[in-house]
Length: 149
Image 1 (cartoon, one colour):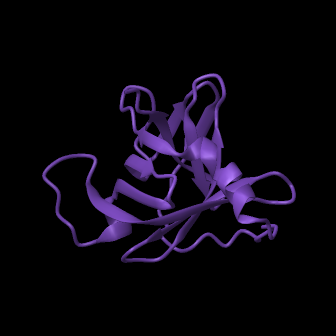
Image 2: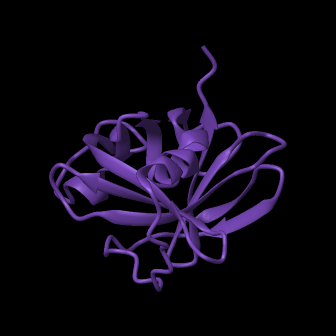
Image 3: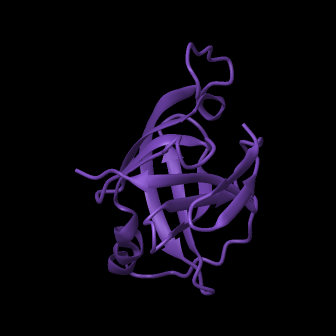
C-alpha cells in the first residue's frame, strides 16, 4: 500500500523492493556493551496502529534484549505466493537482530530472519510520541507504536 502518513512529522512513500539495503555501511567496530547500549532503546514490542499511519512492512515487531526477534511482516517479504484472507496480508517471522550506530550518528537495525535475506533499516524513535520509525532505500518502511502493558 502506498500513501502518506504522519506521526508527529510528515512521511510518505512506498516500499516495493525486498532486496538488501545497499546504503553505504559506516558501522564502527565497537565493543559488545556499546552495541547493547545502541539497541537498548529499541527493545520491546512494537505494533502498527491502523488509526494513525498507513501499513508499512510490519504489523508487529518484538525486539528482545537477547538479540532475538519475532514479527508479523508483509507477506511478500516472507512468501510472495502467500494468499491472505485479511488485510494487511502478513506472515510470522523470527530470527536475530542487532543495532549499530554509524560514525555520523545514524542507527541501523539489521534483521536476520531464520529463513530469508537480512534487511537493514535506518531506525529512530520519535521522542514526543515514542514511535519507532524504520526506513530502507531512503523511503519510510514502517512506523510502529510501543505496546503498553
